Amino acid sequence: MTSIPRAIGQVTCIVIAGADARRFAQAQFSGDVDALTPGHWQWNAWLTAQGRVRALMHLADVGDGRLLAVLRGGDAEAICAGLARFVFRMRVTLAVAGFTAFAGEATPDGTVSIDADGAIMLGYGARSLHLSPVTAAIDPAAPTEWRLQDIRQGWPCLPADGEPGFLPPALGLEHLGAVAFAKGCYPGQEIAARLHYRGGHKFRLCHIHGPKPLPPGSVQGGAGAPKAWVLDAVNGQEGAQALVVVPIGTPMRINILECIYSVISMFDA
Image 1 (spheres, rainbow, N blue to C red):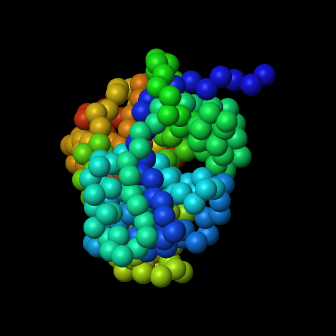
Image 2 (image 1 turned 90 degrees about the horizontal axis):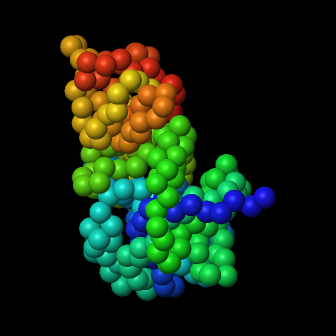
């Protein structure tokens, strides 16, 4: 039986259109846009010149010449305005678009399709994300269930304020395929390549489980414990689960705010 998609919230995207849309994205984003084929999506990012993650996204080729940057956190208006400064004479337009997001059934990972009502569907393997121009009431339980799946998979979101601070390895972006090293230049490429080939990154992404909910943002560990950055956290019947950025070498049991959290998974750079 086909399940009915459940509304999980609002998603803001950036629509990149025009004859030079792909060339523009390839020059600005850290992933290999040339490898993105119509009807598919890929992880991608926009870095600062210092190599820090300014925008994180699922970049989708919807098959009609447009690219859709489905943002994972950050300020869409600020990101769009920042990208616009690099258009120069390229034949490309940038626009912010809002959608109602629905959680759908299992769909092949990396695929993109558009239904008869104009909804865009991104396949995530065991689930799918439907982006509809139609507003709908949010299912009370659906957003928490959706975020918990992101946490378990190690799928990061940037802080709501959009302040760039993380280098790609801290968010596991190489593991997700959001950073390419065999393409032309892009902002932050030199720093990303240095971290990849020479090492030296100091933080990694972890899924942790513990007794109490954690506030998003920077939190202090217990006595002698390092600071952690909580990207997202949800509370359930079995306690709190969170996706956090911690220093490399952090033990499998972490003291955060005087509570002990167990590391469930550590995600590669």
